[in-house]
Length: 162
Length: 257
Image: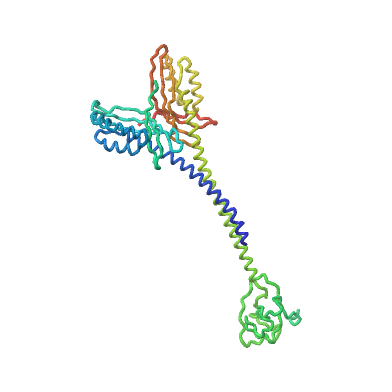
């Protein structure tokens, strides 16, 4: 009787093992997808923070951008902070960005490093303009995962090559 | 067979016998049955009978003082005795069989349930991995296909258009035809040629058979006999679908706010 019970348990345990293995595979695949989404979200947020400029709220601007930055991008931003504050104040610059649908794409992600392309439009006003001037940017954002967060370590314009 | 010719000993053992009234196994030396309280001093000896397939009838205790001395003179209630064989093994065996069948059913259900769940998870994981792979291959394919789509020489426009249609789906080629004819007229009239250079391509969304890409493409346009070059920095969304193992352009749009 005991032997029969044990024998009847074997297929259940085996099937359970197969399910556990496949469940793990599915969880891994979901985790990869979630990581891709996290990269795209982080790049979108940081780029939007960086492009949202208002000479009246420079402190907030600096804090927001710094919070999502790391590496060369952060140190460059911190180095230029003083001159940037001055420029914004003097020109009374205001930039309002938008990222259109289909304007964010994953270039690649390998381990804790990733690159994203962003197409951004913006309306810029300053003391020299009467009405907002349109801008169209092509940006490549480099990100690094640190402490469980994706932070921007590089941001560059993809300008046309002459 | 008359009762008196029957053996005194029951099949239960040398020192036991079967009560003729209730058929229980009792000590051979007993003069009163401990089950039905019958007086056995003059009672006929009843041999044990084989196990009956029917469930044992209920045993009714005999009234004290009832005369049971005459052989054969046994009342209905006394006849309702157990057959004499021990029913415990029968019911125990039936119960074991029932438990085993129940366990077998549970085992089958459990195994099937796990296998169904495993198959569902396998399909989900495969779908996600296939979509990722689709994104990678489409991202690689779109570079050359956009170059082919957007590059032309006004002296060979029709040939260029034929090549461009090879990287389009039939649906998109039909949709693109009016635009292509406009570009053709302008290109030939202005003697203009155009070269597309893809600077970067990325994946916006992906499924196994359809990928949307964001492409940064520089388009350099020149007129025949002129060194002046018109440069346009374009950002386009190119949707590709899988057909016959290849990625074909199914739509081109400009991302606008």
